[in-house]
Structure formats: C-alpha cells, structure tokens
Length: 421
Image 1 (cartoon, rainbow, N blue to C red):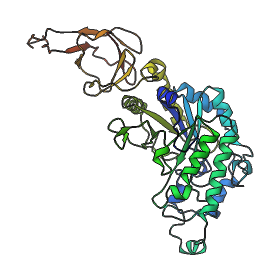
Image 2: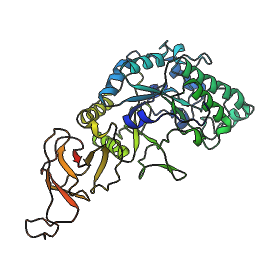
Image 3: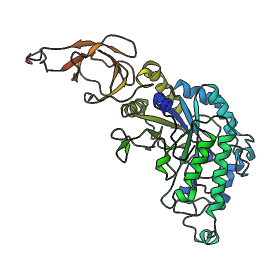
Image 4: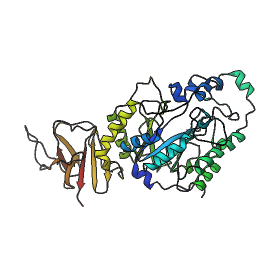
C-alpha cells in the first residue's frame, strides 16, 4: 500500500449516516471541548478534571443501541482530542483513562459494543496536543498569551512529538481489530503536513488497515478518501480541483462538540432530518455528533433528538440508504434522492394541495407516501388546458401530485415515485 492508495467508499456512500462522539475530561468542565483554549487554562489547573474523571454510568452498549435505533450505520469516537487526554490505554503516555478514577480502557469497551451492534467504527485522533511536552507552541495553544511559559518552552522538538503521534496511531490501528475510518483533526495555519510527516503517517495507516478510509485534515489532500465540511451545508456536490469528491458533513446537535451544559442552541429534529436529506441529495454523508456528559451518558435532549430521527429513519430509510443525488431539478422547498428506479421527493415546506414535477410527465408509474405506503394521486393535465376558476392549467412535460391539506405527521414527508422503464 502507498500513501495515496484510496479506500473503498462503497459502504460509506451506501450507509450515509453516522454518529460522531466527542468525549473526554473536558466533559467535566461542561463548557465546550475547547475550554482549555478558550479560558487559557494551564496544565496544573486542568489536572483536576483528570484527577476526578469517573464515568460510573458509562454503558457503550447503550450508546450503540441508541445510535443504531437512530438509523446510524457507523460511528467515530475521539481517541484523543486537542487537550492530549487519551480514552485508550496507550503505552506511550500516562495521560490516559486507565490512570484516572475510571481505571480502564474506555475505547476497548466502546469498540466491542459498537462492533457488537453491527456498526462500522472509526477513531477521531487529534494531531494537535496541548499536553505533550514537545508539542511546539502555536497561535491556538492555551498558553499562547503566556510570555513566561513561551520563553521556557522555546526548545520543543516537533520530531519527538511526531514520533509520539505516529506511535499512538499505530497502537490504535493494531490493538483494536478492524477499523473502518481514521478521522484526523486538524492542521492549524501554523502547521503543515511536514510537521506530521503526513505521507509516512498515511502509508503506515494503509499498511496496518488496508481497507480503511481517511479524511482530509492533515494537509495531504491527495491521500484523502473524503472531505469534511463542518457546521455548514455545501451548496451542492463537493469538488476538489474540478473533480467530484466524496464528502461527509459533520454537525452538532447544539453547536458544541463536547458536553456543554448551558448551551441551549439545540437544532430541532426536523432541521437535523433536513440536513441529512440535503446531504444525501448532494451525494454526501452526515456524521452527527453527541457529546456525552462526565457520568458517561447521553443527556436527555440528545436522546430525544436521536429517537425522533430514528422514528423518521424507521419509516423513510430507503430514501437514504443506498440513495444518492438525482440530476432532476426538484420543486421549490423540496429535495430529490434516488435509488435505482425509485425517486424520492422530500417535502421540506408543505404546499397547498399540489406539487408540480417538471419534466416527469409520462415517466412515473406510481406514487405513494413512503411512511405509510398510501397512494398519492398523479394528475397529467392536457398541456393545452387553460387555467380558469377552479380548473388548473396544463403544462407540457409536467405531472402534478395531489396531496392532502394537512401535512402527514412525520418530520419530513417523503413521496416515493416509481419511475417507468
């Protein structure tokens, strides 16, 4: 395997929907996973979170069941975030879960639980490390404004840190069985692929896990299997240098990746379903994040969102799994996804009685709501018919769907169109 060999995206672009999990000792602060940066906390003051981290309610089997019930097919968890704390039993550091009151390898339990539920698994691993003594200071380091600290740490050796980074990735891809995704994060402006030796890193990853998929955040785009827009929706299918690329949008439930007790900026389940649909309609995936609390549980608001999405997926998943974009232009406030000879119309804004589908006259054999398989009436008016009073005018090439006045009681109604041969 070489650094630029690509992974097989077949399963990834079929499954479309995954769970992101940001979890670490920052959950104890409950003020965002970047709390150490935002509040410029030094190692000594951050140590209290390490000393008291005891997630006694941690049940990765429950997490896995909730992810599966939400319709997710894969999951990615933070093995190490920027603060340097490791959820796994790395032999290269003492800054790990096994040395906290938790006293065990939390990643191993997670891998076993999620794999046991049939989900594919991945690791998010930060190439940044604010705790490692040889990680050079940069503009996003928590002590960026501490002149005395900076003066005392001018001799840090990136080569030593780089060996540590590579060594930990080797541990993750050697000790936990088959891993489906390696999700690196991220290369800040002050760093580059040279600092990580990204070519050697990717070569090692592909040698250890030949089928793995790698994202695009180590300043080495030629080796990336997919790109990762964060906290926004692309206008359309994504491209690099004029070529379409696989993509996975990463989104939060409430604007924070880690547990943030007082953040009330929660997206509605309806909005989250629309984000998923919009992603698939643009040939992308959605990796939706949950930030467990320091006891080791998904908070009730996250559970409620996942359950609502799961109910929509239970009824409408065949418009998502194995589906992708259509080259047909959807009506206003709608999205199309397509799977073989079935075209799925996702209605974002409910109309009054009629939805007009241009260019599809004579091309639809049957139409039904996907959630209950109830018929949706097709109307193909004479294209020469003029609109008058209660009579709808005709238009060449257009077929009209007649829908009820009341929106069906689903977050986003989906109409399944069976296309003619």
